[in-house]
Image (cartoon, rainbow, N blue to C red; front, side):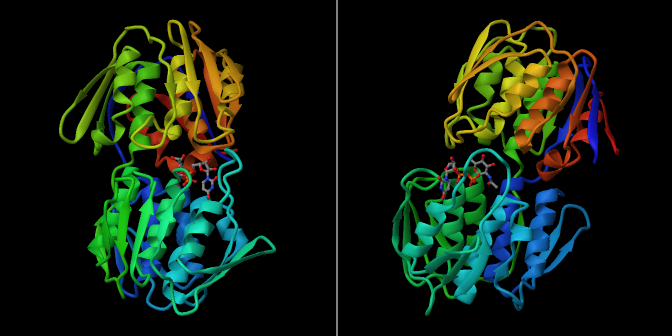
Length: 420
Ligand code: UD1
């Protein structure tokens, strides 16, 4: 299995082009199931997760063509199966989202309960409750969801008990072809939700209010094919901004929607890093100034994203003082802490809070993480640490960061991928 080896202590200097958003891309891929015409996605990231989703779609009868460049063509002319098997769904939680479109188009589906990152229990009760409200009969049997909607799904009023990105997207994917109007209350407001609505609307769907808590979806009879560009990845952009703030140096991020990281920039600035924005790029600079402590709690968008919590923590392990980070979204998302402690960080976890007392330096070590974003925080810590850091289980990084070693290497980082 590959590992990433980093010789730390070198400030970053250069430019990084941000890829299309993983979290958006995999839901946009599921859109193809709703339509018998081709869906072309551009600005697609090349990731293990998009490959996994491609494999799952192919098993359902979708023609999937990748390339050239960041392009993917998906054509679900005729579906040959409505069963998504465990072996394919377990690789990535978001692949569970094929259930809604299959139900909408074929009125039946059998989809394995999901796997994915080990960051907490992550049930799918909200997804299933919403699909039931849209008229689906749902049964759980031997690890599978068996769903049927005789005569098709019907629009309904749905109020989510708390905000869920996945459940909001899943319900959108089902409701676009339902009969009548669906109203979603307490919907998630992430940029990826807007991206999904924009793509569906470009195909003929009638969605209003995406990006607000109340969204309305007027069902249509059919969707048509389209070419659509995936939104830039705000989490990838935030990860490299925090890497520059942690290791020091000057990095210009290209192909960024800086407004999608409104909760990050003030925190980075407060921590002593200069951020300069122009229309399509952001310059992040920390040139010899110390890192200052910051307190933060994760929240649904537009709050501070849980997907940047681990990377922010890596930065404040080196701050000049004490920081407190509270994780509100997932109950088990501090698995990077023991690994950062192995590198010399001073972190105490109490329930949902981590107290981080800044240390003067980190020291390279062999580390591993069991989730995607946590692995990125270890890379960031490794860039700043003295000596050699080896990040094991690189497949987590490959799930969500396109060419992380190449992108950082182009900024002068001494980083390489080693096959064992
Ligand atoms: C998505 C993102 C993930 C991000 C998360 C929160 C993708 C592929 N993943 O995950 O990177 O960290 O949003 O921004 O887009 N929950 C339930 N029941 C449900 C659904 C969710 O209890 O049916 C809980 C989860 O366990 C979690 C919370 O709700 O504690 C929020 O999860 P959710 O917003 O659904 O996250 P995901 O869509 O899984």
